[in-house]
Length: 35
Image 1 (cartoon, rainbow, N blue to C red):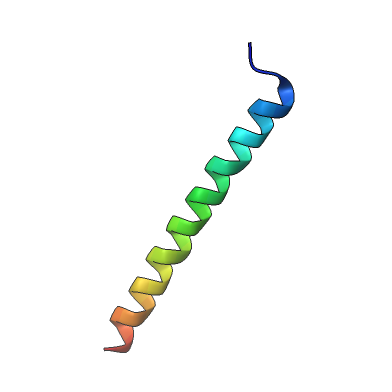
Image 2 (image 1 turned 135 degrees about the vertical axis):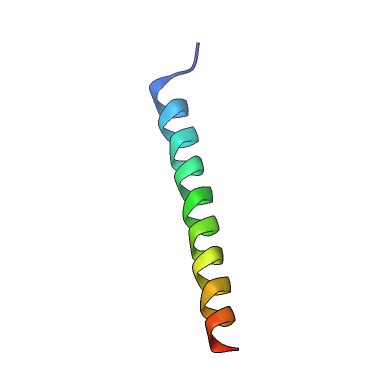
């Protein structure tokens, strides 16, 4: 069984990954608009 700390850490990693993807998409769209 996963401990509460492991679940929280795993959830935090997922959130970080989603934020990186969001930032990447926003940056890409921003660069696209500049062209």
